[in-house]
Length: 214
Image 1: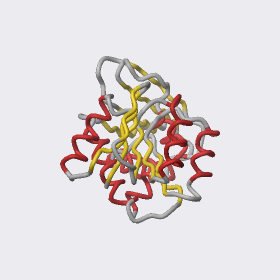
Image 2 (image 1 turned 120 degrees about the horizontal axis):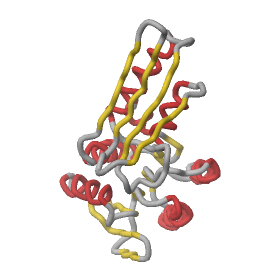
Image 3 (image 1 turned 180 degrees about the vertical axis):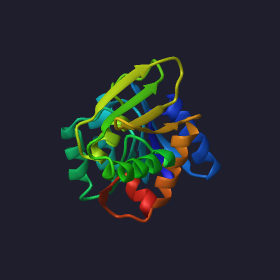
C-alpha cells in the first residue's frame, strides 16, 4: 500500500518504517512536527505521534480519503469521538498498544478477574523517561477491560520500552501476570498485522482486539 507516516522521525516511526519496507509498502507522505513531505496520495495513514497533532491527523485522513491506524496515547474522549465520527466514511484502527502479548495478558486478566471478584487488585506500569502520559494508555486499557476501579502505579525509568503487571491478592495467595516489551518491533509488528486487517475494510471503527480476533 501507499502509506503516510505521522511521527516518522520518532523511534516508533523508525521501527514501523523498517517493517513496512520489508513488506514493500511505499512511504509517500511524511509528517513530523513542522516537517511535511508529500510524494503521492496515501491509501493509509499511520500515526504514532503526539496527541497535539490529532486534529492534523484527522484533517489529513479526510483530505486524502485514506484509512487510518493510530497508536497515539493520551487521547481524550472528545478525540475518540472525532475518530468515530470520521470512521463512518473510512476504516480506522485505534489502540494504545499494538502488542499481541498485551492482548493475551488482557484475556488472562479477564479470566482471573471473574474468579477473584472480592480480591485486592493493583496494576503497575513502567516506561522510559521520555514518555509523557502517566499512567500509560495501555494501563488504562487494562483497567477498563476489567470493568472496576483499580489503582494504577506508574514509573518512568531509563529506556524501558514497556512493562505492565497486574496483581490479584486474597489474604492467602497472590496471582501476578506480567508483560514486558523487549523491543519496539513488538508494536511495529502489531501495526503490520493491522495493515493487513484494514486493507479490505471500507469503513468502521476498530481496535487491535478486533485485529487479533479477526
